Length: 138
Length: 364
Picture 1 (cartoon, chains in turn cyan, orange):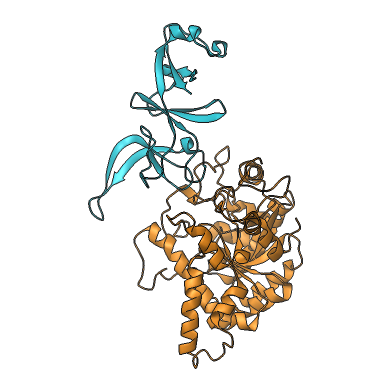
Picture 2 (spheres, rainbow over the protein chains, first blue to last red):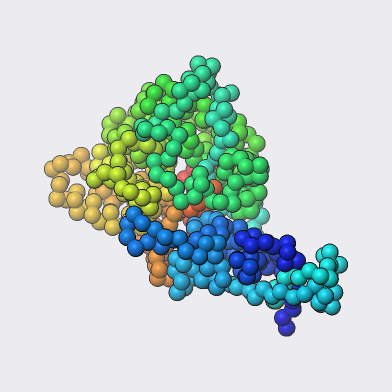
């Protein structure tokens, strides 16, 4: 059965920021991309690097040599080692989308009142009844 | 390590044949340089065979060519902090021995040869003091100034027999192809000292990396290194070096390996057809290539078809292949995942450590 795990208060993870949490022995990177939250496994499917510590950048495309365009700023995660790029929203690789993807987790947002009712250990967090909290389900 | 892909226990992990030690600044060399060369370094800097001394020939994919997670705490350059090297690589990967390949300053490409000789001595002393003494898992390469053969011989003789040094470093991007006679005294000195020659992709030759000039992109420079390593191997065989010193071993570092089987066939055919020009070659070039050369794994070819890499490694010869990580550079290979899992355990152990232990005389 899946259990919800608390990550942090929503306000503590501003746009463009990330937080790496350990849930059931797995390191998961939680990202705030333009106000939406995404979670992916902190392990590059290519050679095992700590993927979630990589640069949050753009997708670069080109129509011809000498010109380039940047798209989807802040939505593309670049591995700290070999530079493999992944769509933070889907976990899909941009180098080899057919065969390489990183495991993704659903991140949910719930009001603070539910925190004290939930199955997790709430005492390790400063609970604000007005704030909103982020969860990962595993 | 409980990972099944990693068939070692205790302190008997991989031997990593390519680790780049860093400096916080060139001031780390001052205690190892005579006063006049400290003054010289501060006044003039280094002078490689290029216009802009403190730049790389091509802008890199990653800052300082490094893994973006390899910057030690406090912002020091990657590879410059021994504790962080231990934590992130030596301990984390259970490395039994790591062979240092110092690339900066680029001693072998220094134009002022007297200064180059002083820098070579300084970089070698720095390896001993900063790395070998506090960390016995680390071994190193004797850096020399190849264009001053007398100084290079003196440097090799000075360190021969030192337990920290396991090879002599020469760059493939040299002033002339490495097989040329101007470099033969260096091979004689290395052979006499019983040290292999480590040829790591490096050097600022002053001429373009390709036969038709300067390419536009780092990606082209990166792949042209493979051609440079092949040209070096051809030079060493055809010029007669591997005939003159049949027991001298050459380790081609960072230059790939899959090409060697095709090259062996091509060279043999050339040798038959050009037998009058290459009359000094008694044995087929493929015999030289198999006998005299080792290859390191990183960056290895990564074919799409599963199993193809394993076939390729067996074709090249498992006994000639040495594991290398290239820490802390961006194209770092993790010893747990870089070597194909469908090799036998004996083959994996040979590549990951036993071949290097035998070649470099390292005790496991």
